[in-house]
Amino acid sequence: MSKTKVAVFGGSGLVGAAIKRELLNVSDVEVMSPSHSQLNLINQGAVDSWISEHRPTQIYLVAGTVGGIKANSTRPAEFLYNNLMIHANIIHASYIHEVSKLLYLGSSCIYPRMANQPITEDQLLTGELEPTNEAYALAKITGIKMCSSYREQYGCNFISAMPTNLYGPGDNFDADGGHVIPSMITKFHEAKVNNEESVTLWGSGTPLREFLHVNDLASACVFLMRDYNGHQHINIGSGEEVSIRVLSELIRDTVYPDCKISWDSNMPDGTPRKLLDSSKLIQLGWKAQYTLRGSINDTYSWYLSNILKSS
Image 1: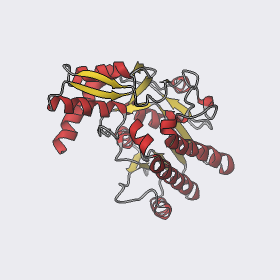
Image 2: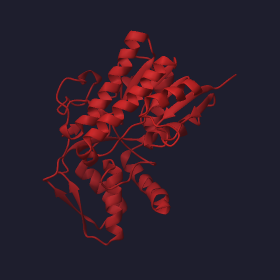
Image 3: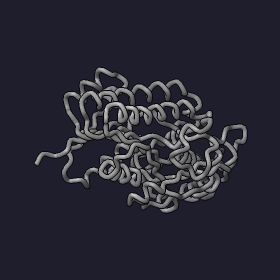
Image 4: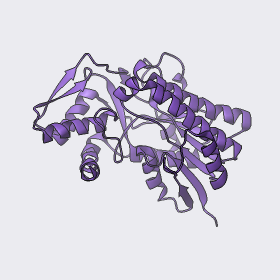
């Protein structure tokens, strides 16, 4: 029997690499994942030609321009344009060339800044977005609506999933442009190397966040591709919530225990609280396996073995 041809767009990133690792456990699939040098996803003609030539049966759409609060707030045009183009090109070409199923991965920033907690799927577009990542959120909301619109008009089996904040091996550990966990790891490590007494972090440290290990997200995505065909997007979270202040202390204690932490209250906090209601996914039979406290050390070890040795 021939294997199912699966395309992972964004396969070199944090999420895409994890999905490819997860798919190694699926015996009847052939995984294709073009790199940026092989395929410019912003180029509509190139995307259409690639899908037409390779004819994947399933597509994981996890490609895009991503970053933390600083990157989002200082590069809004880039985040809006790049993500709109990438998502529109792939979704439309998937319809044209009759891809059997597509999974689009959004972000929890699609929800209103002051959404009721925990956040249920039906709170989409019920309030104002968080200003610091509004451009990225708008692009992600458009991707969700494209999937549901193509499903409604053309009958495409395109589904969407919304993960919470991610971390794990393969992340972007840039101190300024990365997500909160990898950027903190880098800041504390650099402070240790330079014998600095303290690290200054943005905001007050009071916002509450939920974090999901990328390997858990990958298993959820493969699970949904196999078992979910619903119209509504579905949340993916760990259910584990922590303040940024406590998170910083966990990372500090792992990387540089003697370091002091100071907070720059002149810089933005972002959304006060963001916890997803993942009960729908849990009811389908999936549950997160990794804990935050047990995984920070592993993430730091990966950073030491992969980022520093390659630099």
